[in-house]
Figure 1 (tube, rainbow, N blue to C red):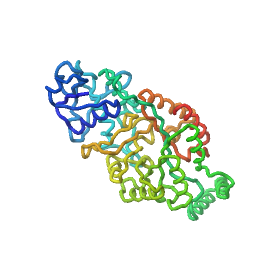
Figure 2: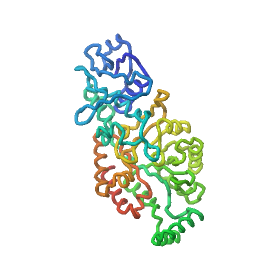
Figure 3: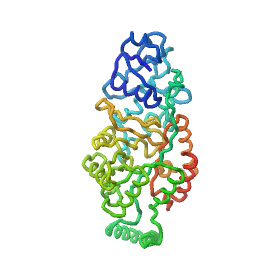
Figure 4: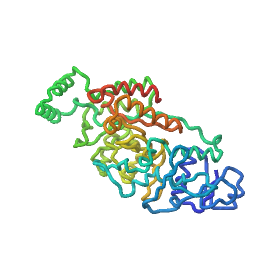
Length: 430
C-alpha cells in the first residue's frame, strides 16, 4: 500500500504502521512524491486536505502533523453503529471522520497527558475518558474502524489472517492469606481479630496454620489443573515489593514463596507486579525487578502495575529504562472494556518525546475485582458481562486478556462460586 501524504511526521508514520502493519498485516510506504504516487500501479490511497486524482482518499485533520500536546475538540458522530470523532467534510473522503487521527488519539492515550481528574490512587478516572462518555468503552472501536477501512480499500484478500486469542493472566498480590507471614505479622493479625471479637477468623487462621485446612489464597494447584485441562498459556505477575499499607505480599526472601515462584515459572511466563509504592520510584522498581529476576534466574521482561496504578508517560518510561518489553496494565480498575479502544497489542508512543518506543502494550478487557467490587455484579451478571466483551473481541479477531487473582480462585468468603464461574468461562472463551 502506497500512501501519499503532504508531510511525513513521526506521529503519522506510527499511526499508519499501526493501522496497516500491526492490525492488517499489510506492508505500506509513505511518500510525498506526487509523480511516484501517480505512476504507482499497486494499491494506494492519499491522506491530506484534498485528493490528487481519483485514488481512494481520506481527508485529514491536523493532529498527526502536530508536535505539541493540547486539548483537542472531539465532536462524536454516528458511524455504522458506533462512534467516530475528528469529523471531516468531504464527499470524497473514505470516512466522515479522520480515523487515523482518532486511532492515534486513543492508542497513545493522548487525553491522559492533559490535565485530568484522578481517583484516590492517582489513576486516570475512566468516567472522564472520551470513550466512556461516548458509550463506546466496551467496544474495540479502533479495530472496528481499521477493519472497515480494509473493506473500503478492497484489501480483504490481502490482509494477514487475524485470530481470536484468549490470554489468561494472574496477579499474585499475596500468595497466602495466613501462611508464611512471619511472626510479627501473624501475631498482629491474631491481636487484631481478638480485639475485634472475630473468633471465626481466629479459628480459621488456626486451622490453616496447623495444616487442617488449605490457605484460602492458595489456588495454584487449581490453576495448574486448569492450564493442563484447557491447554492454557497464562502469564503471572508476581509482587516482590516490601510490606506497606497497600502492599501485603510475602517477603521475597521467604523460602516457600521463592519455591512457589520457581514452580510457577515452570508452568507459565512470569512478569513483575510493581508495588503500589514503586509507582514513580525508579529505584524501588528496579529493586523489585531484580528480586524477581534473581529468584527465576532469568531476565524479567513483562510487567503489570499493582492497583493498575500508572501515569502517562512516566510509568512506561521507567519500564523501558529497565528493559521491560511488554506491559499489561492498559485497562481500568473501575470499568471493563478497552481503555485504548483496541484489543490488539501495539507499541507505546511517547507523546513527550514525540516518538515510538520498543515497549509493547497489551490491553486487557476485564478484571475480576472490577466486576465484583466496582460494578457490584453477582456471579451470573459477571459471567454475562465477560461473554459480551468476548463477543466484541471475536468480531475483530483480537486478543481477549482476562485479569484474575489467586485469591479469587481460592473461592473463599467474598469469592465463593468464582472458581466455578472461571472454569465455565474458560469453556466458552478459549
